[in-house]
Image (cartoon, rainbow, N blue to C red; front, side, top):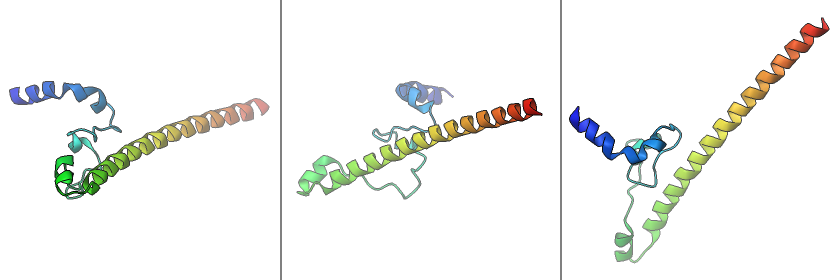
Amino acid sequence: MHSNHHSYQRDSTHASRQMLPLTCDCGTRQVSNCPWDLPGSQLPLVSPKEGDQNGSNTEGLTAAAIVVVHVAVEVVVVVVAVVVVVVVVVVVVVVVVVVVVVVVVQ
C-alpha cells in the first residue's frame, strides 16, 4: 500500500488530465494511459540521436506523425462527444416542446 501511495504522489502532476477519461498524456512517457495503446500496436519511437546517427530524420518524423495522429484522435473524440451531447439536448427539448404543444392544443 505504501509503494502505491508513493507512486500516486509522484504522478500527481498528471492528476488533472487523468480525471478526464478522453485525454491522455501521449506526448510524455505516460503512453500506457492511452486507450488505443494495445499490446503490439505501439510503434517503436526512435530518439533523435539515433536518427541523426543513421543520417535520416524518418524516425523522428514517424514519431512526430504518431503524436499528431494521437492528438487528432483525441480532438475528434472530444468533438464527437460534444456534438452527441448537443444533439441529445436538442432532441430532448424538441420532444418536450412537442408534447407540451400537443397537450395544450388538445
